[in-house]
Length: 214
Image: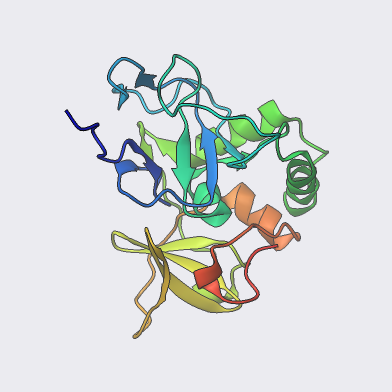
């Protein structure tokens, strides 16, 4: 019998949904243990920890069999902007420099003391979840004026702000949006948007433009 090559349900959209699609993306991360390793399928819960993190896909040569053991559930994101929109933050272990840059930008943008990771996780959890569903927020102004890396919604679609343009998110990358839709909600948590405005530069998929990412 040939092995089952169907994609696992572990790809995350900007709305925080975990879906089964072939595209893996450029970053991984987790929300705790939310899968059954015997079947490599998701459990009904979508997190077991408030520490939703963004990790690199390759770190010190380590390899894991995805969703094959009762450890953290490997999730995948198109890019860091997608993960931030879903409510994740950089990992302090495998992405320490980025995590510290995010932490400093969070303090500057939110006018707070330098936060510890649990404080950021608690704030993000209140901003990303509403009755176990994704929480969206009112737009603070025109979408094109939001900082690069922010995601906004037009109905059920997500759009990335990059260099005063808005690009449609797809599992394969970003696409030009013409005509520009009527944006109605902010997807990226407000505290993260404040960190972006204060100078944190998330890695964005190459389809966002030649100057995207870091």
